[in-house]
Image 1 (spheres, rainbow, N blue to C red):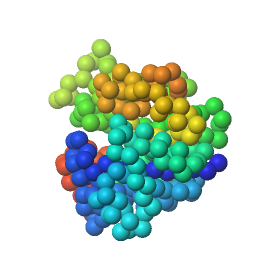
Image 2 (image 1 turned 60 degrees about the horizontal axis):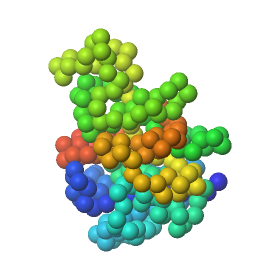
Image 3 (image 1 turned 45 degrees about the vertical axis):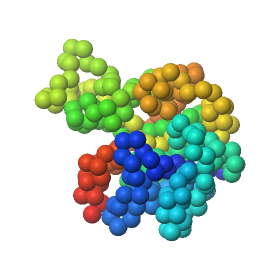
Length: 247
């Protein structure tokens, strides 16, 4: 099974323009993501996909293969599908540039899931430990069924504890199964091509969460829970936290 990891990298990020090239511990953010992805034992090739010449030149400067993709992609999933279609693979991985602390062992554990032929899509989550994260719309929440498949992703705080409603000034209710999404997706390439041939779903557009296209069109996404301590990069405040963590 050929496994291709793609790092979709837009320069003009809506929330934090230019974050993929922001300096972090002496390297651009995207270099951290690429180097960590290359350490995964079950990944055959790692490519940076971008429509930006500036990002392409930066990637080439540290030796990363670059795929110049079309500009008109609504999300990273569509950009990854273009690369997977052109380069060919059995399994495609979308590693978001939001995750410069991505763990190679997590990538390998997700690839291991695809040894089961029924798995078509997969991603990862980590426990939420603070009320601030639970209420933060930049922290995407997930609820799962008993088989480990995603029921829904939302920027809203889910699940909502009706008997003990969350309050910003209170700790997270004990026992609440609060999970946050980690910025990585895996797809069987044939399923990815079918998915991206479909229009964006209404929920995907409303929440601005590309993974909801999978669920709204009736597919399942297997979820791996991981004790992940990486810091997602959505804002300049996150960049400051990352610098403190890595330096």
